[in-house]
Length: 417
Ligand code: HEM
Image 1: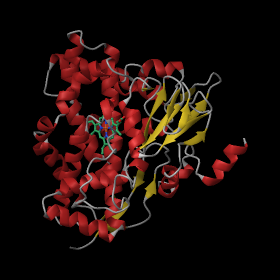
Image 2: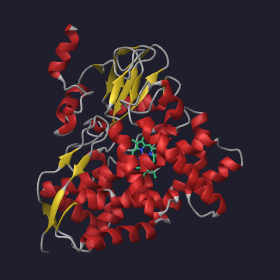
Image 3: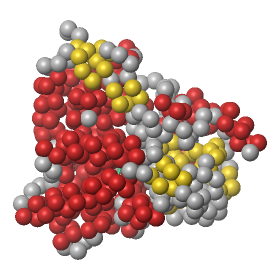
């Protein structure tokens, strides 16, 4: 225990949401990046060997994500969702995020073409309509919660449109997505080295009959949406029903919470920091709103980490890695790695180092990256065009999470422009 106690004093407990609730512990991550090897976080929750390696440097994360033979996703894609109870693991085994190539390539192919840059560019008119609809409603409010009115609404409506679910179900989709991320904090240790995410199983059991219902409707009334396309893949025998369900569940969850966080946290940064505000405005005027969005997403890193598991003993980054060791890849740290980014804590839409790890890398790199950038860009452009001026009207509330850089409330009021 001696070494663990020493580390606990030096570094925050990365398994404890309290370490993240005030803010992401960037100063501690900077010290971890400067260690000669990797930082070992002791924990029995979701790990086989009594802890996990915190991978905090940009180059080390690239190396882990590149080598899918040595580092598998099949035991879980993010912490603490690793080594789940057989009940939950069984239901998630067909989830894209929890597969390795070649199976991963097969599953990803089913929908990836729907999210390429050229296809997504065609989404712009309807994304703009959604954003304008949401902002029209804001014009009627003087004091409101930006998370509730904007950060939740825009991504929920965009995801619903991509999936093809009815408008009246949007609140339900948001509830399921939020329940999933809340569930990720309610972990319970089970005896045989696995653990259970209470609630995750419950959400899946609710989403499954819903997905089947929409799948049936789309079979009779096909449309240009994901339910129709992937439902047709099932009918042609290209996807199993379980793979189809996991795709839908993943889309509901991955397409919502991340963008929700990016929208809420970017407005918080803008309102709290005059330099960020001035540079955002300037970037929009210069027609590079998309670069301002990239900078927001880099600095926010909505999922703070993803994770992999070692498939064999090996030497890596100066450490002896054992088979079954969990590697937690802290994108939030790598995105401020001074070996890659000049003045990493500075919001700089004109920086030339533009490759970030906010969307991950390698075969699992986020499928929705272009769509997310589009949503945020259009939102910031329209806020600018309408000259919407806001100020903080209370203390922003952070989420209770070791995984997502969540913001749960951002009270604001309108300022006369
Ligand atoms: C700012 C918003 C977003 C951020 C920061 C983000 C970030 C990420 C990250 C870090 C990963 C894991 C990559 C890895 O393991 O290397 C990921 C995967 C994924 N994301 Fe996103 N995401 C965002 C928005 C979206 C949207 C809008 C969608 C859907 C429309 C989406 C769908 C997915 C899917 C399906 C995967 C799994 C890909 C795979 O395993 O092959 N994401 N995302």
